[in-house]
Image (tube, rainbow over all chains, first blue to last red; front, side):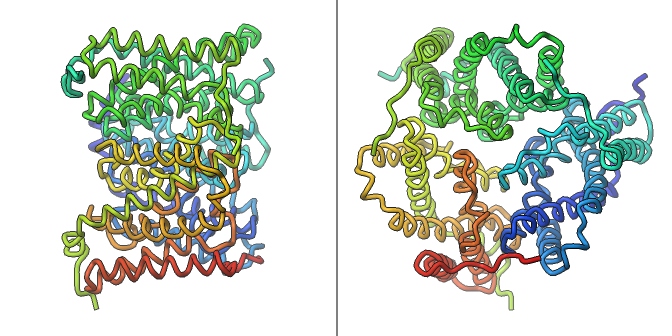
Length: 212
Length: 212
Length: 212
């Protein structure tokens, strides 16, 4: 039973969603700076990777849906990325344990997936491509980071990652369409995506691979 | 003798051209899913590669010419890519012989090159960049697939591939400009591009490499 | 003391800046064609790499700031890239010494950084993201070339490169904002960026790397 059209959903999008955007941004920027740290790079490369990883997914989303690119509207997003790069540079690396970062990244993944899908709905994108846009927002920053670093991308590993983003954005779009309040759909979607990713981190949950 | 301006050409673009778009989409999506199969990936990665390979070239084209990105307008394109990914996953791999796929890919290449150039003309792009846009549409999905898979891209092999796309789009743009009806220019362009690619598949036709 | 708003700066942007664009384009196109030559590629691949490297940074800039993509407006930019590819193909490779190319590239880097930042200001982008846009314009063509060629990108080397572009664009934006005439801000910015890059080429000047 469809209780709300995409447009009605879109009109209801609260401005407070922007906080999901900054949360995802900071976490992904940190994962970019840490990729640079693992390769013993310079501070400029830290900043480059922080910015590309932090803004990459959202940039692609904005270009695709025809929105003004978010980090060109003011200095905040770039400032956050540069700040995170400097922070990672000057703090001892042992405080950035890979496990801790995985958990932050899981929060960013779930938040970005829901935020990306919500922004796409607001720009009039139909439900299925809007859900895809959530995945793009959540995953493409990391994919671009891996490609630039010459690493096999996360999408080539059986570990559950893209799947968790897909669960978050599909659930959010679906629940919003059947009439759940936006905040509830967002909470359930992001929560479910985070839990699925958590099982991958904590227990190595993975998808079956193709056996031909 | 120029018998038609780009604008006149553009106005004549038949809506039926959209069929070329879906044909190219399905074939390229299959080549993406098969790249995932060759790497023993998960179904989610099948879908990711099918979508990126199928929509990549056309997405870049639409962003560059300022058109609304085609797969965000409705659920059809994404639906085709997901359907192809599931189909490749559930059918025995031996029915997807590399040779057979090469032939499908050749059809997609020729169709996409002509369709991309035609869409660029319709958006007011001058002839030379419009022809380039045909090459972008036909080739960039595969290039993005190769980069994400960590493979040497098709553009680094002497085998005739980009050249066939260039022949199709240049011939189409040239013939349309000298006044041939659109369908005739499209048929000749796509036919010539397909034949050239066919000679590369069947006989290993390749371009000479640089010897310094 | 801020003597000029970004908008006032933007209004003052002289059309003559376009010359910086063509200079950067030709030099970067040559570096793309030479990358193809070093890999013993075909003439079509020369053209592909020349075009991608020459136009990549500016294309990304135009997409991000919402400007019409520069090389789709007329045949000039594509013509320059194709011409450069043919020139590199037909001239003896020894005249393209890596050292000579580094110097040309340094000119392109400085020119593109200033031009990219200036164009972003003209499109109403705030100062900090506008400076980033200078770096994007100057560096991303080379990054895309390296990714397509399967090479470790310039951003992974401690050698000063991105830093020189950042110096040029930050200095230009800063000086323009405090009221310097555009041509003076551009000269000082591009000059400083070129000098810094020159020290990297001539003396191996590099940034310190992370030691964790």
